[in-house]
Image (cartoon, rainbow, N blue to C red; front, side, top):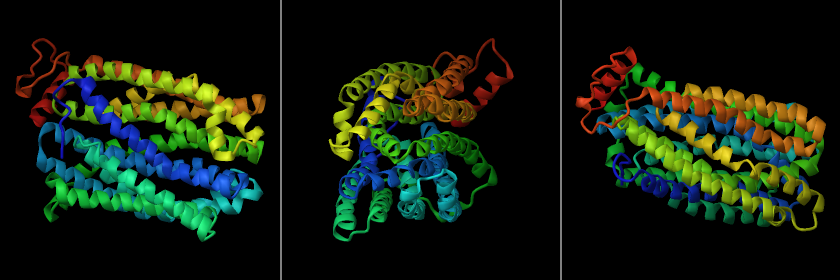
Length: 472
C-alpha cells in the first residue's frame, strides 16, 4: 500500500496524489461545515456566530498539533525515499511518543484556557456561553485529532493519499448523522455539534489504526523501535516544532482578526463564518497541491533527486494556479447563492457582507496557490525555518488588516487582511525556495555514490554529498 514518488512523470504523480487530498480536505471541512449549516439553519444566527467565533482559537491550538504531526511525517517520508525501512519504523515510533506527550499537555492547557481566551477576544455576551461549550468539547477531543492527523500523515508519507480519504468520507457521513441526532433529536445545541465532530474524528483515527495493522507492515513498530536515541527525537522536533509554531503564529493573526470582527457585531461574525466555510473549500485544491509537494519533495530529497524536485514544483504551479483562477471566478460570481446555504436567503445583511469577503479573497487565490507550493516544498526539504519566518510576516500583515484596515474600512478591511497576509508570506517563501534550489546540484543521481561535484568542494556541497551517501 506504499508508493514512491521518485520515479515517473512528476505532474502525473503530483496530480493523482493531490486529488484524494482535495476530496479528503473537502470532506474534512464537512465536519465543521455540517455543524455550521445545521446550527445556522436550525438554531439561529447567534448559534452560528457562537460556533464561528471559536475558529481562530481552535486554529491557534489545533493548528499547533496539526503542524507538529505534519512535521513528524516529513522525516518519515525522507526515510522512505531513501529506502531505509528500519529508519521508517524508528521515525514512526518517535512520532508516536512525541504525539502522546503533546496530546496530554495540550488537552489540559486548552480546556483550562478556553473561556479566558474567549473573554480576551471580547466575544459578544449573547454568544459567549454557547461558544465556550462548543470550544471545550472540541479541545477535549484533541487526542482524537492528533491520532487521526498523525496516522493519516504517516500513511501519506509512504505515498498513499487514497486510504485516509476513504476513512474521512465514512467519518463525515457519521458526523452529519450525529449532528442531526444530537442537535435535532436530543436538543444538545452547539455542544452536540462539537461532540459529533470529535466522535467522527475519533472514528477516522481508529480506522487508520486498523488499516496500518492489516495492510502496512512497514509501520509495524516493535518494542525495540521505541528505544530511540535522543538525537532521533531532536531531529524530528527540529522539523516538526517550527512547522507547529508556524501554524500558531499564523493563528495569532487570526485571533487578532477575530477580535476586530467581534467588535463589529454578531452579524459580521456570522457573515465571516459562513463566507470562510466557502472560502475554505475553494482553497483546498491549492492547499492539497501544496501538501502533495511536501511528500513529493521529501521523498525525492531522500533519494537525492534534486532536479526532479524543480520539475515537480514548476508543473505543480501550473496545475494549482489553474485551479486557483477557476475557484476565484466561482466565488466571485456565485458568492451570495453559496452563502445562502448557511443562513437562508432572508438574511440579506449577512449575505451582502459574505459576498464582499468572497470577492476580495477570490481575486488573490493565485498568490495563495504559490504560497502553499513554496511553503510545503521547503518543509519537505527540511527547511522549516523559512516557512516560520514567512509565518511571522503573515502575522504582521494580518495584524495590519485587523487593527488598522478594519478601523478604517470596517468589514471590508477585515476581509482584506487575508490577501495581505498571503502576499507578505509568499515573498520570503519564494526567495527562500529559489535560493535553496540554486544551491542544490543541477542534476539527479540514481546512484547516489556517484555524486561528486568535480569543481565545487565547498562545505555545503560536502554536506550534500555526505547526506546522499547516508541515504544510499
